[in-house]
Length: 343
Ligand SMILES: [Zn+2]
Image (cartoon, rainbow, N blue to C red; front, side, top):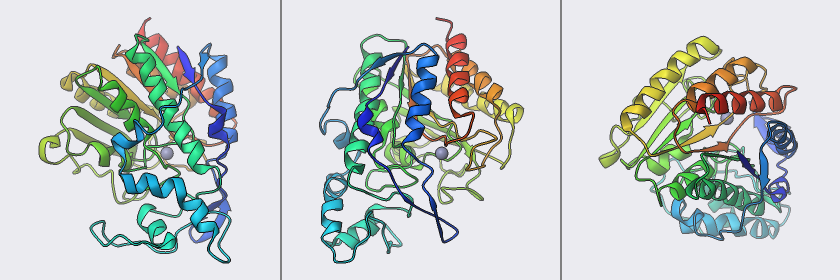
C-alpha cells in the first residue's frame, strides 16, 4: 500500500480554538502529520508525492465563490486595520439563502459554519495540497492499486460545498470519491471519524450514485450538533442513499462493531464498485475530544471488518488528535485492514 503525502500540508498552523467561549490551543496541529506519517511508514507503506491537480477536483465539489474566498481572504483580512493574525468570523447568517455580502468580514461569516477554522497565511496552500493528496491517492486506485492511504491534513469531512467547518476547508473525502467516479459507477463512503461528516453529506445528499454512511457520536450532545441525525437520509434522487448511525457518548468496541456491521450491510446492499473510508482516529478512548471509547485493539478489529469488503479502497485521513497512541491506532487500523483485505 502507498501513502500519499505532501509536506506542504504542514504549513497551516491554526491557533485560535474556542471551547465554551474560552481560547485553547488548536488541536489540529501540524505535528499530527509527523506522527501519522511515521506510523504509516512503520506499517510498511511506500511514499508517493501528490501532483498538482490545480482546481480540477476542488471545483467539482465546491462553489466558485467559496474557492475565491479561501484563496484570497487572508490578504483581504490583513488589510483591515487592527485585524487579528487569522481570519475568524464574528458574525453568521441564520440561513444559507440570504444575500451574499461583499465585505471580508461578511464573507467570513457566510463561509464559516463555526469558529474552529481560522485562516492564516498558509491555510489555503495546505488545504489545496491536502485536496491534491486525496485526489492523487484516488488516482492510484484508478490505476490499479487495491488500496491507497491519503494522509490529508487539514482534514476535510466537515467542509461543505460553500463553507468551512470543524477544522476542515476542502472536502478531501468527497474529492477522492469524485476521482473514483471517473471509473467506478457506484462508490460508497464509510465515515468512521467520531464526528458526523456533515460536509460529505452536504455534497452528495441528492445523489444516488454515492452512498454515504457515517458512524459517529450522537450530535444531540456532540459536534457538529446540527447534522448527523438518523432521519437525514438524502433528498430527491439521493433519498435513501445517506445513512447516519449515531452512537451514545462513550460507546466502546463491541457495541461499535455491531453498528459497523449495520453500516457494512448497507454498503453490501448498495453493491458499490469502490469504497472511500473517511478515517478519523478520534473515536479513540484517549482522544482529547472524548466522544467515543474505541481501544487501539478495537481499531484493528474495525480495520479488519472493513478490509473484508475487498473493494478497491481509498483511505482518507480525517480527524484524530495528539495522544501517545495516535500513531499506534493508525498502525492497528492499517494492519487490521490489510489482514481483512486478504491481499
Ligand atoms: Zn473528528
